Image (cartoon, rainbow, N blue to C red):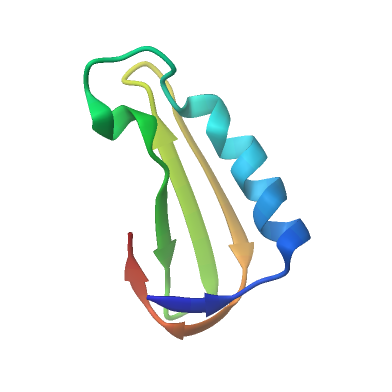
Amino acid sequence: MEFEISKQKILQAVNIVKQGVANRTTNPILKTILFEATEEGWLILRATNNVIDVSAQVRANIKKPGRV
């Protein structure tokens, strides 16, 4: 995965999505944010705490689609 995006855009998206990240959990995957770069030019960020799911998508210059 490879993309270009402004610092301001990615910070806004992370600030929205971090509300879904679990603070206290024994499951490490719930402490992460999934980044997905699509061929259509979207960067999608997702997080969950097993109660709520939060996502945000922003336009980005996607050079190589993928997920991390």
